Length: 211
Image 1 (cartoon, rainbow, N blue to C red):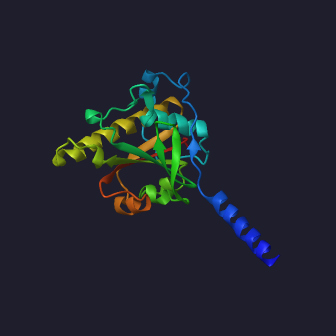
Image 2: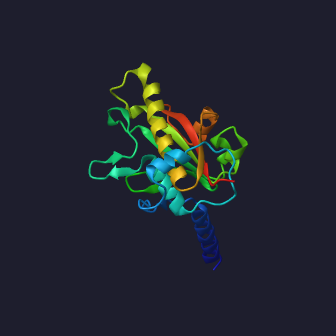
Image 3: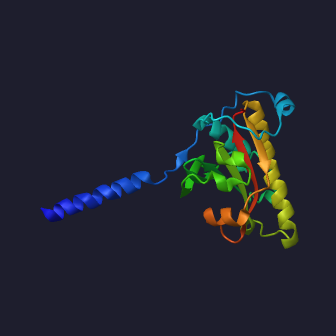
């Protein structure tokens, strides 16, 4: 009887531990028929550094991530943002209040990387700590095999910038705000995100609703 009770306690704590682990988040299809026109979005595009405490819905996050670097030509596995030589070397990491996730555009899913509210590591500015969404653009240099070593940084910077501008236009189209940032502790964040030495953080971008 004592052994059965002990086994039950162990199983209970195991279930509690599993329930507390981060789970993958399946994203929703983007709302392609909504939002401002491209020209209106360009007119409204701006950098925002103050955000309201309004939470972003799963649909909001799904729209932003698809615009950022989702698949717009599924059969060819091509993305909304271009990359040099089609290396597709930029990975989008998503920092939410409950943890850090890696965006996989091929199955529209956020895969957990590390649990906890780590938004303060998304940048040096105060607003990153409370903004609902921070994106981190990471270049995987292992995918840039044909590139000259001296040119990898410039390629990665340009490709990350394309993604960031897509986010700007999506936010403008859906009445959200964002700002792209270079000020962040790359070494500390890379350790937290468990990056390999050949993965380099290029930029961060904060997203939320206007205050």
